[in-house]
Length: 230
Image 1 (cartoon, rainbow, N blue to C red):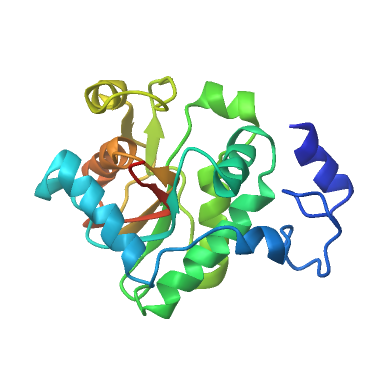
Image 2: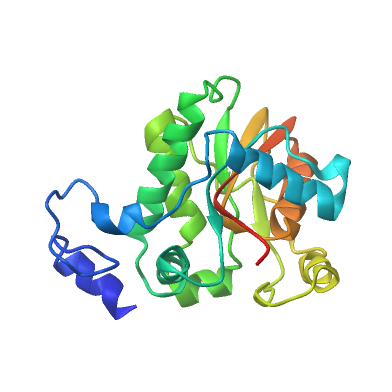
């Protein structure tokens, strides 16, 4: 968390490697970004995401469309950056990743038909603990590129679930059982559901179900990364 505060005070250094930035347009240096190995083409990330959801939850759970930037592993620079974004207070990374996700969606012309962006919500107690929701930061970055609203009141997290990290598929399913419900505002049209990493899809599938219960006609998925088997 202290590193995140340090970046707010000294934004001219890279938030990952702490080296001086040549440009202040992004809080991450080009060298660190070059170590984030993307999927081989613009469609591959979305295909990997859809394949993961289908393998674990079947055809009915597959999103209408999907996008992802990077394959994710349990070690390496991307893992360290994502962990720092989620737990270490380096929330500016969310905007960086979100802008790149937004550019990916726009490059494929896929923003046509989307009505809004919905970040996967945190439970209120966890939000207080972390002070921010990394999915909201990512969603804001996407929204800045696509010029779309971010809806945060369509669904809510009503169960303070434990971390999904290290859980089996069956435990992940149980952990997400009843975790989301429709929020204070109805959801209309086609929405883009956003999170940081998709491993089995349990969280996003559960959140998508709540969005459809809230009135969404269709739910597309976008994540920074998709976990690959090691």
